[in-house]
Length: 410
Image (cartoon, rainbow, N blue to C red):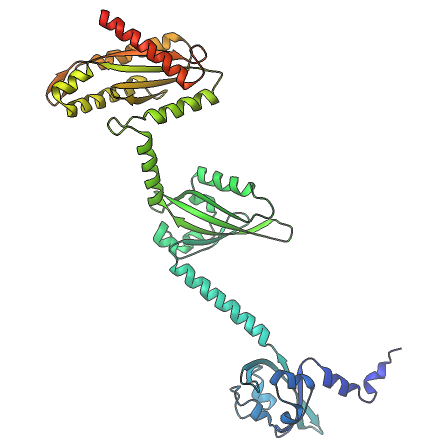
């Protein structure tokens, strides 16, 4: 059974002294080291014999401490850097316990707590923060962090150059307030689709510049989770891709549109018809094919420049006649196509065909040349004439040639 007076047993204090994890030494009133424990030898690299041959002044030689090594002299310098026997620096926290006898200080017990690892970690964190700050300031991207509820907790200074905002104008604001609804929907869609072990997503969306314009950004988001898997923070790196996005959109537009009339081209038109027939099967749709009568004569007589201007004017008139409910496209040469969605009766298409024929037949003045031209139009109807774009084109083409033949007979 452990006795209360164990500390009074011979060797108890000595045992505690020798095996304490902190370095402890006994110094006399002159500062000479009389005895040191095992830990102090480990901390500074000296053997006990070497320590006992040193003074406190010699041990503190590289610590930047004044010549007064008393408790009074060290009270404001509790944390010191002392040189190890091998030359490297050791960070220690010093505690002095004066030894008093007959109201006279006979010496001190000095405890050295090795805090090198703590200081090293602190310096490492400080270095990381400095590196992060440097990267944030020099990066051409916007680096940000958001709380779990979508509030900006950090934004790099580059936000000023790229989006016009100061850091103060962004930090503390919800990220959603800088995005249009479609971008926010896209972000939440990505976030909800994450599995528990997927923490990185990349998405593209628009961000509002301070001047009111929108810029395209490609953002890589890294989600930080707690132990339960709940997202507690989002780190984002956003890159301005507006120029690339605009170039891609221009390339896509040119690939889908006719260079003369600026109408959708044959490929794009067929894609739109295929999509409509697949997605809206319960409605009736009409496809029309139109051919300009006498266009070759215009080209041969007035030249191709006049012919191109004629095609441009016809395209404009057709778009006005069809309106927003349909698609007008250039099929090729002097042929055009029209897709009219969700029609109720055939009479709607008959009326539209008459309107198109009328607006095209109105005289056109091109480069001082008055030109009159007629059009032949054929129509096909989904469900009745076919369920594929090829079927509808073939039926519309046959109907168009019947109309052309009829016009020629007239």
